[in-house]
Image (cartoon, rainbow, N blue to C red):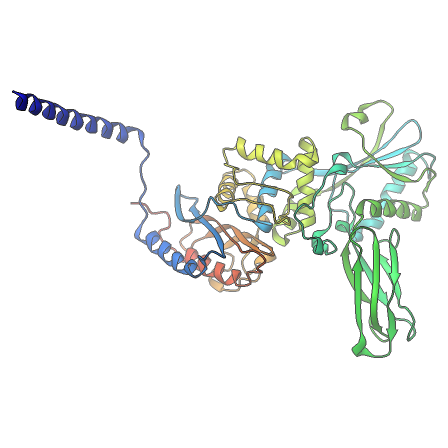
Length: 494
């Protein structure tokens, strides 16, 4: 009898398990998405890329790579793609895509000029990155003409530059202090001229006499220590320009040959806010304007200008956002990227909180920003972090955006424009629109690629290795790009 009952228990348990399995299988068939299996071509592609990366998969290299098809929801290749890595200038893809969406593709910088009842003038700076040395004369002539028209040639009060929320923005955390005098590390400010850079020109004089030193665009606001001399010997020429990282101070040393052409050096201004005031004061003075109270900084809330005591006199407008984004992505312009980053914050809320608003934008568009850490908009900080997966998500989002054409055209093109001119292989010519990235210890390349059979892919490739220049990165990237360009049936699934 016990055997009979045991048999019944085992029999009904078997029947129940078969029934449950059939039920679960039916539910699975109804609820689960269709599984796309990779084609033999994609399987072979993955093997070839594995072989390319294999020599670098050591403890010293951190590598992340993701490639997807934008035609079908298929991952063509992924390795360590969710790992946060230092993206260098690939961070600009996040800054510029956020700008399209948070500022709008028609955004322009507006620098408004106000007057109050006490004869003070207010320049409400907006972070416009487009005031260049070539345009300073026309800019200040138009400003002086307008001030004369609406007021007079004599400003009996003060001329105030209003920095908005830019004044308490601390960009530079994680920037290498040894690079702060280089033009690619110029600091962002609410009012900026010539990307907060200047040039010093050294002209030879008599033998054993100090050369003539001049500063452009405005020879004011700097302390110059001239320790250099003019030499009769060409082989002794060796001019050194040292920039004090804490002040607008230049130390010129070395020798310049008596028959030498003028020697030019460019540098980032270390006190750009004070230099901007010097430029405003001198250029208006050249236009025969008299400012009795001098030029100073202030910071008023936006709503303050709605008070009846303030009258808007005129507005200075920049070029369009697209021009700036193209300069950022094609030429990797760090200064413009940081100005744009802080502009996003100032227009949405506060400039120092730009990273918060950008993360909110990503979250609202269902882009996982868990891997993202932003300390600037350019990628200069070695503490910036994001994953290849995040960059590919953004590239995919932009591919479905109304701003895709502008975004796509803003990127460098292999063998043709910007930082991708270095890729000379004819098979890659015009096939890749992407952004490069480089700081010591980090290299990156992310963007779009068109295969030879006309399929558009999005990819992100990043390598980190502490203190390394990773000089072979372009060769490695080119091998991978060639594999992708030559891929056939990239969107075929089984």
